[in-house]
Image 1 (tube, rainbow, N blue to C red):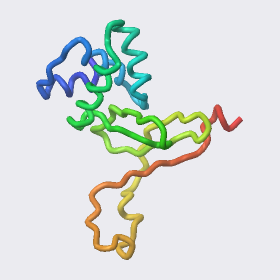
Image 2 (image 1 turned 120 degrees about the vertical axis):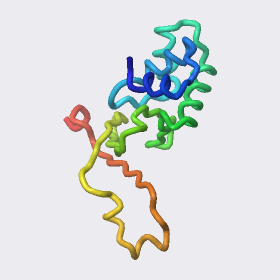
Image 3 (image 1 turned 60 degrees about the horizontal axis):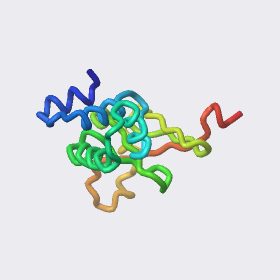
Length: 137
């Protein structure tokens, strides 16, 4: 059983066949699919699943905090099931592939007190951009 499915079961989330398929599609490392990509993969497993069901399920997962909604390129939102492990993202500026990365050190330590303007900073989101090996050649 996937990590996401285990977390959802532990929460007592009602596991319909449609919800299960969406969670299965999102399972894995470096998964950052759009809602349309989730729907296309879900249809392969459960042909009768509706696009609206996928969108609604993704919305529920985001509200529960089990999936993170990303917008790295100003276009389609992507969904990251790696919501329980702190990480940042590495995005290819050519093909758009996204990888989860875990830099060492505390990203808050990079922001000097003089640049915090009295804010109590609680979260840092960093996106690294560059060209992946396939696009760099």
